[in-house]
Image (tube, rainbow, N blue to C red; front, top):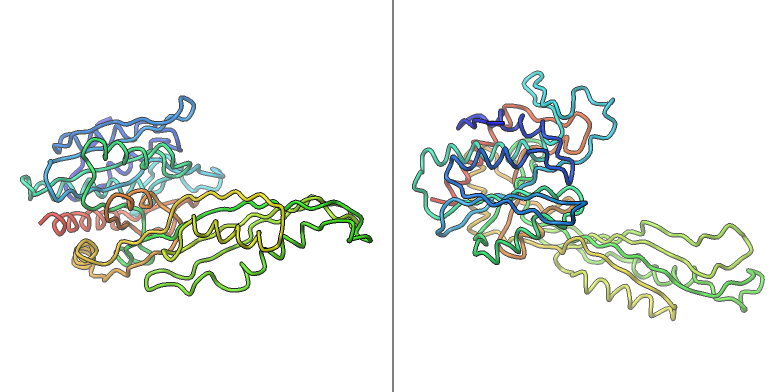
Length: 384
């Protein structure tokens, strides 16, 4: 399929991308469309598949120029499942236009954003064919699910081949109420913990002959829940520790069980690391004298791109293009920015995220075109 991207209209490419049924890890031709749009603009493209044969993920890295500064736009063409298809007003992969609104899975998150960036890029290159530095795109097919064989592995390849950028922008839909009202300059870390405390089963009437693991587990959790992990920072809200599961598998009212289990989720700011929080859990459990097992898993450490030249350039461009001064924010869940932050300063900016992952996901055509113009303005600021 051939798609023409005009300087001021990302709509054709956005529709073509939505029509690709690219539910992770499927691609269904989405990256082919992106590659065909970029190659006529002078980009060299590399296709980078990773993962086992039964979960093969396709990825794309494209670069124009070799000098500094090197600006990278990152995004993903994979989407979440549609859910109850009967609840959709329009075919989720039909890319239907209705009342100047584009409907379809990925319209908001984030096929529309990728199309807008390429349209803005086309506009920028028309006016700056000999632009300074270099521009690249890191587009993955593994952001919405495991996030194992996508951005993280492409970055390893980029490092090995001399393509690490000086700055990166992830095109997630960060705007809340109006285009341009929010830039994300960091994200909280997220980790899960699974705790099993072992005791000795016995009759509840003879507690001296048993060892109640529930009591020990509750005693370990109590100090962790008694006070906030911190008071927040200038850019982050308070960290949060939530008990998300508690189970003893006991159906009898007069039996002390042999073990008790809990699950925790911790969303933490940059005052903490997952390693330090894991040790904090160990300390709380050791203090009870419990025999226990603890397993933790971190999907991403907290990171912050401090306000400075890069963030200032984004703010100027967005304000000029939209008339809105963006707030600097670190809220929400995780994104692939957590991987990029290990290599270079990174921020996130995109359209209004009101319908991402929802039934009837959609984006206004006027918003999509305004986003393209804003991305062109960003390129003019970061590559003067």
